Length: 276
Ligand SMILES: [Zn+2]
Image 1: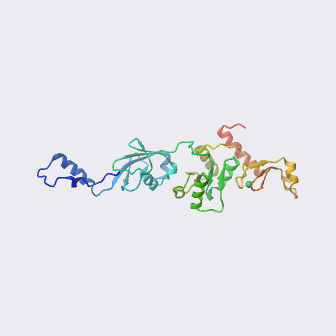
Image 2: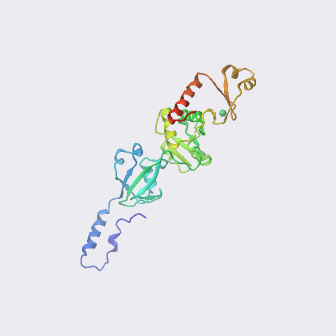
Image 3: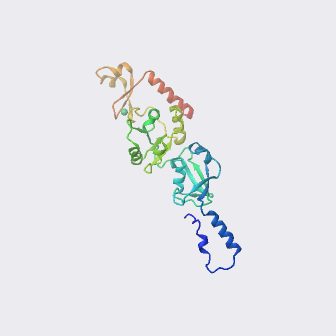
């Protein structure tokens, strides 16, 4: 419970005639607190500094606590979604996000560990602004849901919870929604860097060329000729399809576009030290 500022003077016996030095000191301390808000000293992990104003990057940076907001709400009010927070420590002790900060507490906010453990398989849901990242994750065989046009924040959060998917977004407001199963900020802007960021944070298992880039469905490698003959216009035969999606029926083709995607996949595998 938060400390009740300004209650100590009322505990003084009404009949007291002589000033007690100890009580007087307590009185002065209490009176000095009247008229100012409770304050904690907050230290954020360095990887969270980019999310907050410069004044909150100092060690034990002063932050006002009103006695009603939880520690989790206080951290979020600084600009840090709880999806980015690992342990919360008060004077070295771990506390939940529901902790009510009291005056004078020293709070440490740790970042998430990397790779970040998840309470289930690494499956993702991307907001509408991350289409290129979604395509690249699917090329690597990572289970990645993505809807375009936008289904809206409420529906995204609900789907994260219903499907147990990690919501990836650059929108911190979206990541503050309580319904989320899990979430993460995508900090970088360039898709190649975004991909590296997500792979480093969650280390999802990779299985390149097993998912459809259009719908996330499972890809089935074609025996080319039998599949080609099923198409009357010969499109697949002319362009060399190598796989077909079981869900949406789209074919994947060899060609210049495919070679660029293959180079991207090979580069990722090389960077991660995966030999195929
Ligand atoms: Zn498909």
